Length: 309
Ligand code: MLT
Image 1 (cartoon, rainbow, N blue to C red):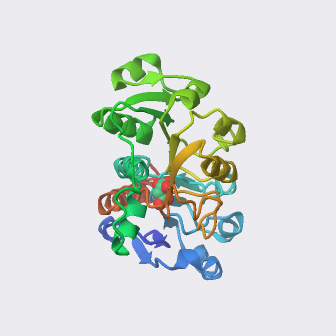
Image 2 (cartoon, helix red, strand yellow):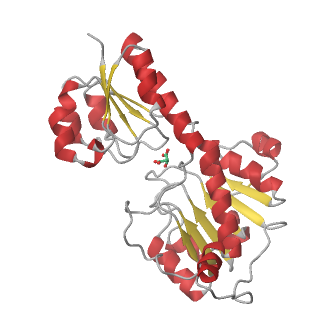
């Protein structure tokens, strides 16, 4: 019998076609990920589960997944999967680390420009029929120092784009070698040096015990006055309450956040502040990236279910 795959989140339908072409049975039920009980009731029938971020592959779901062999995350972060529970049952968890990197890096750059020029507020004001030309004084990016926390896959692309914008780039990344940094045209620095020097900071690290609150209250106190902070990596990397205080005091001039400590985020200390741009975790949301991750996850899961490789 052909292996059965359930897609329980919104995924490009190109993935459905790949599973079919590879001879697998596939059920595309994009709303199921949000209905825990319904998902729990059917998960036992499937060999593979393809998800984005809405489906939470919890210990309980995994315990009910009698036949499950693989969970495929169309995207990078696997924080919605209980990895220890999956590993204990011998279920492989795979992601697609490269398919949405460019798109996410572009969102970071878009947010940086938006916060530098107050574009969302100027847009709302102009739509409202006001013509507040003198209210929206921005800053240039050219010649400014961008501090990149995490210069890996996505952070590396951000470094490249920022250099194209004529920014000076300093990077904090314990895994970045001096030689590689030189090739990228960035200066490798320690975190404290980055905090003291950067006019803009962008984060591109996963949320781990080491990175949680990497911009916590203490680090925020060390920031260069007037800095603007962009986070489209993971909520929890920045202490939102401490940042809100720093924004109110004027120590931090602006922030642009795509990710929040609690998601879906219906409230945050950052919401409603005048110099804050927010988007609802749209970092990977382009047609191109979603097509890439859907195709990659479908191919990888098919390979594994059909050949064990
Ligand atoms: C990812 O981890 O791939 C991104 O955060 C995108 C997403 O979850 O939608």
